[in-house]
Amino acid sequence: MKLEHIGIAVKSLETSDQLFSRLLGKDFYKQESVEREGVKTSFYKVGESKIELLEAQNNESAIAKYLDKNREGVHHLAFGVENILEEIKRLENAGFQFISKEPKVGADNKLVVFLHPKTTNGVLVEICQEKN
Ligand SMILES: CC[C@H](C(=O)O)C(=O)SCCNC(=O)CCNC(=O)[C@H](O)C(C)(C)COP(=O)(O)OP(=O)(O)OC[C@H]1O[C@@H](n2cnc3c(N)ncnc32)[C@H](O)[C@@H]1OP(=O)(O)O
Ligand SMILES: [Co+2]
Image (cartoon, rainbow, N blue to C red; front, side, top):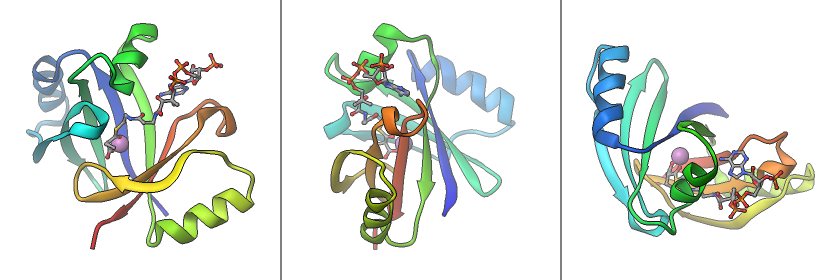
């Protein structure tokens, strides 16, 4: 398992891209929209890990709802695993609760599931695996 990315909820990708490019001294390597999640993302490589900036594309988006109640900032931690189905079994046996147990297509060529923050010490956790 590795820290695959840190997801940061932002109001404006354009504004935050300028800030993070200045902060990291590099531009995003990819921008991608995930229709199902109603988000547009920018990805920045930071060593072995990544920063994922997320802007809501509609009011139904989890990011929109999050920003209705919270200021911009760290939204989730994503852990990369070799086999997401095995990891789901291990985590379920370990007592963690999933928002949905069915892996879905995420951004940056991944399959993703999310654990509910009420079972992860208040931190929204994404589990992701490279799509073959
Ligand atoms: C997949 C594309 C991309 C990728 O990397 O590939 C992404 O990362 S997309 C990221 C955006 N999508 C998601 O976050 C999907 C999973 N999230 C959800 O399903 C919801 O956001 C959920 C279930 C975590 C919360 O939704 P809900 O409608 O229940 O919102 P509430 O405001 O009522 O929150 C309930 C409860 O959870 C706490 N909460 C909500 N969001 C977070 C968060 N990001 N981190 C920590 N805690 C969170 C909230 O404070 C409430 O707690 P309570 O004690 O009940 O007040
Ligand atoms: Co993510």
